[in-house]
Each structure stands twice: as structure tokens, then as C-alpha cells.
Image (tube, rainbow, N blue to C red; front, side, top):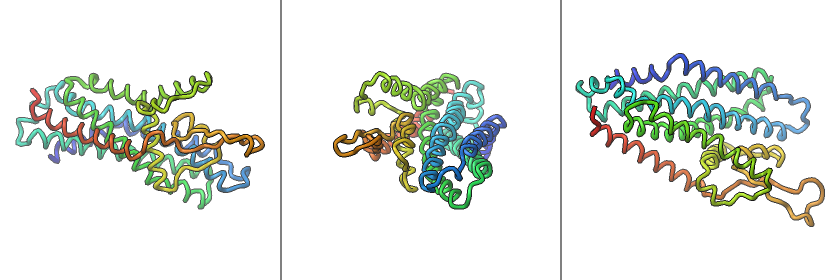
Length: 304
């Protein structure tokens, strides 16, 4: 078991994966650090919220988004399918290890490697952001206070995509066959709903709440918002939250009564609770359990 775990961990921590994690962390840190200009903003809370919103977006779309989802998909999809294609799984099952032990060792090695890569990217993002922005202690404390939320969300993303990747890897005989559906889900999660919402916005068409049932972008952004709520929540003015509302749908604009409010502030941003967050967490938690249990059942009967 230790040998399989170590080998899977080494495969997860290959040089290209490490380089991608480093580049993602540095890129996010540079982008965030260059936008820091505290002396032009008189209100600390206003600036803190603006900086945090940009940081949330960098983590959601880049660190725990494209980078994490791509890496975990690439690693998990080849976990068993790669061994079958190369003929090495037959050698593993002839050794004194049960198939369940082999799969469990591979999953643990994969999860450990992914966690290390994610921590590396997150740490570099913070270091570069803080030093490039020349941020003071209070700002640094505020930015770092959300790191538990980012790690929790990253864990949920990792468990979901890895469970699905392992299941597909157990079913498929080639890695590419298992990888393509995962990449499609990633695109649907991070890309297509955003384009759809932008088109609907320009067309002045109101979106039906029913679409929330199939909007994966909204599902994951709601989970991300829930994680952030555990560390203080996401705050800001309507203008600051507008980008999050468009790109994640975790907020929605509520028009104010013109007879009550006078002036340019004619709308406020409210949390979009079209679906209950506990329901979303329960469904994805159930899917994770089903995917992993199915993987262990399939591997026991798989013809190698």
C-alpha cells in the first residue's frame, strides 16, 4: 500500500503540475498586488471589501477553478484507466494487495498530491499579493482570514471532481475517454453559464429561477459563498458586487422603490438563494459518496 501511495503521489507532483501551480499563484498574486492602492481610497472598509472581492474571484476562477479542476481531472482520470491501458494494473493485482487496497492507496496519493499543489499556489498568491501591494498588517490580516474558506472550498471541489474522475477511470479503458467528460463539466461550471447570463442581460431577458437547477456555475459559487460566510461573508457595495453577480450568480440585483429611494442608487445586491445551500451541499456530498462507492464496486469486478 505504501509503495502504491508513494508512486501515485510522485505522479501527482510531476514537474509540469508544480510549474503550473507556481505560475497560477504568482499570476494571481501579481494581478491582485498591482491593483492595491490604499492611499487613494479614504475608507478602509471600502478598500478591504474591494480587494477581497478581487481575491475571491482569483481563487474561485483560477486557483480553485481552472487550475485545481484541471489538475484533479488529469490525475484522477488516469488513476485506473492509465494502468489498464499500459497493462500495469494486471501486475498490481497479482501482488498480495486487494483491488480495494490498490484503489484506496491511489486515491489517497492523488488527494495528497493535489492538496500540496493547491497549497503551493495559494501560498504564492498571498506572498506575491502582500509584497507587491505593500499592504499593512490590518489588510494582511483581513486577506488571510479567508484562507480557511478557500481551503474548505478547494477540498469540496477536489472531492467532487476526483470522485467523478476515479469512477470514469474505473469504467474507461483509456485516460482520454475519462478525461473529456470532466473537462466538459469544468467548462460548464466556469464558462458557459457566464456567457449565457451576459447574453440574457444584453437582451434584457429575465432568467427563470428554474435554470438554477442545472446551473453548475451557480451551484459551485453558492458553495464558495457558504465557505466564505464561515469566515465573515462577502461584503461590498452594489457596484463592487456587480461583477460577482454577473460571473457567479451568487448575488442578484434587487430594484428599489423609486418612491422610497432618490438618487442614482436604485438597486441593491442580495444573496441569490434560489436553491438552499444545505440542499446543494447534500446533493454533491451524496454524489461524492456514490461515485467513490461505485468505483470500489467496479474495480473489484473489472476485467484486467
